[in-house]
Image (cartoon, rainbow, N blue to C red; front, side, top):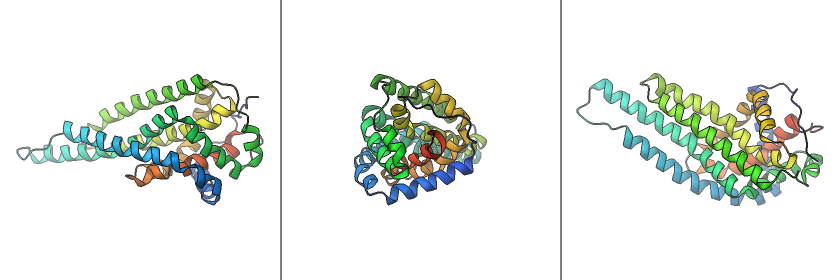
Length: 253
């Protein structure tokens, strides 16, 4: 039977940060999480490293710096390079996560269920038998999130080309948006098992925006760390079970 998460829980960034910390503690304390997340982390670190290097290379290639530039043009070009590189390191782990979850969804699902058993055994028991939403529906939903994420990212990248203002605000706005999107993607195993369709997911993301941003912020910053960050993604995937137990699942508190 599909689970229908409620919509009447208050949403705030501090609440999301608190749930992120609780989820991390649960994930670190669970031997099952440690056993299941390694394959997921290794797949992500390889993809994220390749994407980070590739995107940063594109930024530096399309924003040239030469010795005959005026001081302000030279400074503006370096600010654009710095802002574009920051965006690349924020975006690359997210893109890697989308790709892995689309091609190998079972990796994230196993880690999430290990986290659910640590956070709330009763919730995990209810989710043991997934709702019949179909593999195609899950893949389509993930691809829709990816396309939307890429569209917003390209818009913010264009904005970051605005001298000074864009170079400063572009990465900040990307961080905020990436944090919300990361939490949404982390919730995908729960949504599939609970039978939550894409329109319902969008409504939940809209009403819980503050909490999702708060939960995703520390993980987005962590995952942006070269090589090390994606290795810790499995902890985020397991830790999101705390968000599910307290925020989304009926009787999950």
